[in-house]
Amino acid sequence: MRKRLWGWLADAALLLYFVFALFPVAWMLILSLKPADQLFSTYFSFTPTLDAYRTVLGDDEGIPFVRFFVNSLVVSLGAVALSLVVGLPAAYASARWRFKGSEHLMFTLLSFRFAPELTVIIPLFVLYQKLGLFDTYAGMVWVLQLVTLPLVVWIMRSYFADLTPELEQAALLDGYTRRQAFFKVALPLVRPGIAAVSLLAFIFAWNNFVFPLILTSHEAQTVTVGALSFLGGDRPKYHLTAAAALISVVPPLLLALTIQRYLVRGLSFGAVKS
Amino acid sequence: MSIALRGVVKSYGRTTALDGLDLDVRDGEFFCLLGPSGAGKTTTLKAVAGLERPEAGTIEIDGRDMRDVEPYDRGVAMCFESYALYPHRSVYDNLVSPLRSPRHRLPPAEARDRVDTVAGLLGIGDLLDRMPGRLSNGQRQRVALGRVLVRPARAFLLDEPLSHLDAKLRQQMRAELKAIGDVRRTTTLYVTHDSVEALALGDRIGVIRDGRIVQTGTREDIWYRPYDTEVARAFGRPRINLLPGTVTEAGRFRSADGAFELPLPVRAAPGTEVLAGVRPRDVSLTGDGHRLPGTVYVTEVLGRSVEVTVRIGAQALSLVADRAEVAGLRPDDPVRPAVRPENLLLFEADRPHGPGRRIGRR
Image (cartoon, rainbow over all chains, first blue to last red):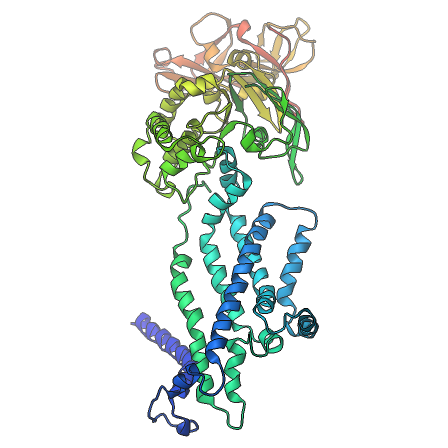
C-alpha cells in the first residue's frame, strides 16, 4: 500500500516537472497558431490559423526565412563534416600515440570551448572583413568548426581509447597497412560514437547565435538570428517569431530521432576478452 | 626462419617489461616460452612481431635486423591472448581477413577453400556465419588460432592459444597443434604459463622471469638440470621437495634440524647452506636407496597414485606411490621412504634477492 502511494507521488512529481518544462514550448505553439489580432489576449480561446507559418515560409514580410533555413543547414552540416574529416584522425592519433606536446595540443583545442565566444568576436569580425569571409558560407563553416571540432576530437578520443589497440595490431599482422587498419577496423567500431558526436556537434552548430549575429548580414545568415528579424519594425510580430522558431527545431529533432537507433544499439563487443 | 633477440629492453613508464632479454629460436623449431604472468612473455612476442619498439637491443629474423621493418613486412603471424577478433565481422570474415589483405591476397575461391580447411582442422566449420560476440571463449580462441593458420607465415607467434579451452579440448588440441603440417614445418614461438604444456609441446623451452631468460634447453635439460630452485619448482606436480640443510665435512647433506643425512652426488664446500631437491616421483616407499626415518603426515589420492606427505624431523617430504603400496597407511604410522642419491639436485639456499642456483654439474 505504502509502495503504491510513493509510486503515485513520484508520477505526480514527474507530471508537474513536465508541465513546467514543456510550458514554454506549448506557449510558443499557441502563439504561432494565433491570428495577429488576438496575439496579446491571455486567455486560451482563439481561432487557430496557420497564417503565421504561411507568412514565414512564403517570405511575405520581406524576410527570406527559407533562405536562412537553408543557410543554417549548409553551414551546420558543413561544420560537422569538416570536423569529422579533420577530427577523427586527430582523435585517433591522440588516443594511440603520445608525442612531445600532444597533451598541450589537446588542451589548447579544448580551451576553444571554455573561452567565451564574445572574447574573440571583435578580432574575428575585423579579420573576416579583411579576408572577405564576412557573410559567406566558407566563413561560417570555418567559425562554427571552432565550436564543433574540439567536441569531435575529445569525445572520439575516448571512444578510440576504449578500443583495444590489439585489434589494429591484429590487422597489421594480417597484412594490412596502418591506414587500412584505421579505416577497416578502428573506424567501423566507433560508429556509435560518430553518430552521437555528429548529432551533438550539429545541435551546437545549429543553435549558435553569436557568430552568425556578428559575422553575417544577409547572404549567410542563419535561422537563430533570422527568426529575430520578425521582432524588428514598428510592431513586433511574436506569432511569426514563434512559428519560425518552431520550424527551426525540426532538423535537430529529426536528426536525433534517426540517429537514436545507432546511439542505443552500440556494437556487441565481446570479441576481446576483458 | 630463425629469430634472435639480443639485449632487448622495453619498459612501460617505470615498470621494466624486458630487461636485456636474449633469445635464440632456431629455424623450424617449436619453442616454448614459459613464465608467470608479468614476466614479459607477451612483450617479447610483440617485440618480435614489430608491435612494440624496444628501447635497446636488436631483433633479428633470419639474420636481418628488424629495427625499422613494419609488422606487415615481417612475415610473422600472431595469435593474441585476448583473441583480438574483429567484433563487427563474422567468423568467416575474421578467418579470411589475412587472405584479403594486400600482402597475402588470394582469389576468393581459393581463400574460401583455405578457410574451410583450417576451420575443419580446428572444429569451427559450423560457426562460420556467427559473430564473435556470440561465441564461447574456447570457440573464440580457436577462431583466433585459425586466423593465424590460414595464411602463409615464416613464423607463428602464439600467445597462450589454448588457455581458455576446457581441459579435455585443450589436451586434444595440444596433441593436434603439433601435428598440423604448417606448424610442424614453421618456426613457432609459443608463450604459456603452463609447464605441462611447455613440456608436452616444446622442442626447446625458455624460462622467462622478470624480463630475462633464466634458462633455455630441451625438456630434459630443464627437468634434470634446472638452473635454480624456481625453475625446479615450476616444473612437475606435485612440486619438487626442497629440503634445507648444510654440507658436512664429509661432503654429505645434513638436514637443518639434524634429523638425517644423505650422500650427495656432487661436490660442495663443507658448511654451505643448501637445499636438497628431490622430485616426489623419485622417492619411493618400497624401492631401494637411502632410507629416511619418518611418519605419515597426510595422504592425498591423485587418481591411480597417491601423494604421501611424510614428516622427517621438522621437514615434510612428499612422494608419489601406488595405491596398493599405501593401502592401510594412517597418519603417524612410521615409514622409511627411500631416496637414490643420483636423483638428488643440490641448490644454494634461496636468498632474499633471488632463488638459489643449482650446484655442480651432472
